[in-house]
Image (cartoon, rainbow, N blue to C red; front, side, top):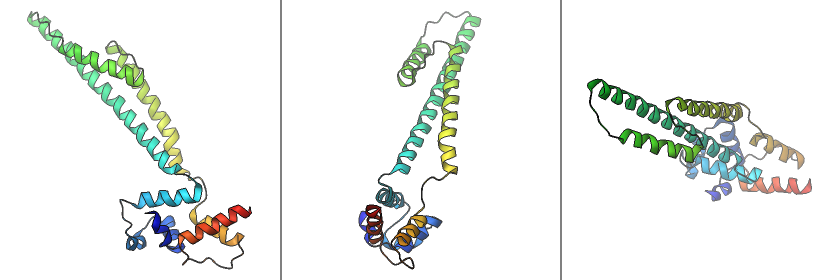
Length: 193
């Protein structure tokens, strides 16, 4: 993938970065599966890191934790409801039955919940603690990721392209230049201040 910066032209990359259409890049073997990797390589060369990729990992991790908490809530809710129904039915039927399987399941889930998230659930009423944690995480998620999707920070590739050629005193942008050549020009501009 990294070798593609020696094949793809500045014009082709500028078109992709503005439109998201990578049809012109397919002749280099770029497809839906590897476009993210190529974008990360270019981003890293331009900015010195894959910040966007790190944000996506954080977002996926947050998604997963919210889903995990929801699963714990649903499982414990179901176990508590069934435990109450079974005990009530047995009591009404006059049957004495000492089966602790549901209690064991509840204990197992609450121990794992405490280990993973530090939430202590000892009874039906404590399920509210899980709900509050889910709500807190959803609020943080909304605040952290949804706003960032709406506001794009940093310089676009087109802005960088124009700036580099302007600083170097070129009359026009060479859209046929390979990305690798452009990155050398960008480095030269940065060295000279």
